[in-house]
Amino acid sequence: MARPIRKGSDSIPVWVLRAVWLVQPVTLGPALADGLNDLDGRTFLSVAVWVLWGLGLLATLVPRPVTLTAIRIGGPAAAALSVWTATAVDDTTLVVVGLVGAFVLGVLSHWPAVADACVDGASYGDEKRFLLRAPGPVVLALGPIAWALTVAGVVTGPLLLASGDPAVGSAACVAGLPIAVASVRALHHLHRRWIVLVPAGFVLHDHLALADPTLLPRDAIASVGPAPADTDAHDLTQAARGLLLEVRCREPHDLRPASRDGSAEVVVTEAFLCAPTRPDAVLAEAKRRRLPVG
Image (tube, rainbow, N blue to C red; front, side, top):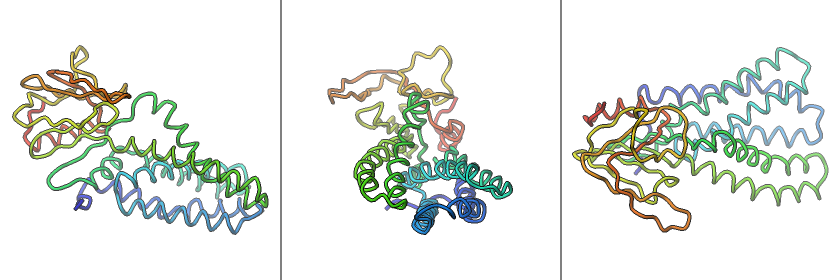
């Protein structure tokens, strides 16, 4: 059975996120209520917003990879909603409080420590999981596009139905919901890529880079540390940005890189690169587990 999230410093970011999400009805709620007041179908929209807020709060209560996906969709959505209230509400105080609270939520939803706590919430036994960074093209373009398609696919149809246009609203629901589901699946796949430190050694679980997860036993690891600029290690980062870690082997190690047609060929390498969201935390945990760090 998957164990609950660890207590202590690792859970603090999730508790902060949970608290910020909990107070959204107080910070963003008044401005949103004012903005919805003159819209058609405001009762339906108000109920929908409360339901979505409740689902988001539930996601923060159960840190898992799937709830990380919900949090990373809902947090920026709240920020976007606060921007809309700024154009629809005249009360400056309500607008500013709503903007600040929602944007803090949006930032926390993408905080690396929150992500690690969520992916580690599904770990087993004496293991520790760390999320890998998204590929560079995803961060710059594909990820924001998938998020926009998700939000648009979920809200467009219901908004049209609430405004009294059942024909167009129904068509938007039929067309938009499958797009939203496909976009959510694409985003969720990014949250199922991680480094796992286990008693046996070091595991890289990345379906974008590898056909199968690769385990490097403890006694086969020469070093784990920041990648030097002139490294010759096999690059498994998918063009991720930021500090990379180099895992160097005592002897050549077999890898099976992922391929679109499924015909993966084995690559033999003495070192490979990976890109965790928190490389410092990975190295600290590796040192605690007495892996060769440096």
